Amino acid sequence: MGIQPVKTYTFDVSLFATVDVKAKTVDEARALLKEKVNGASCNAGTWPTGEPILFELSMDDGDSPNTLVSVDGNAV
Image 1 (tube, rainbow, N blue to C red):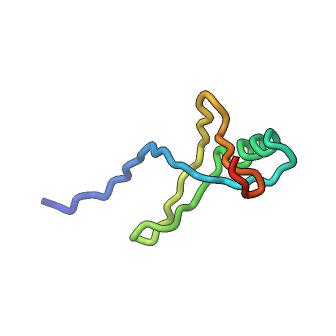
Image 2: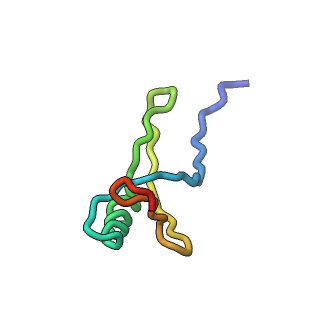
Image 3: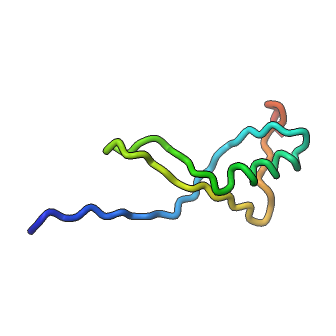
């Protein structure tokens, strides 16, 4: 038996995030969120080997837009 080679395993993972967006209207905020965040390259720290944990973020609006949870820190 030789040394087993290290393989790269790719997973499709659903993540949840809360993002603050400064804008004049909720529609403008949603547009900015989609424009600037969708497709962004992200760094989630490092693996135990010291290599960066990198991933591309993609937003799934599904049947409805992203859920608005607060305005100026006040729950809606």
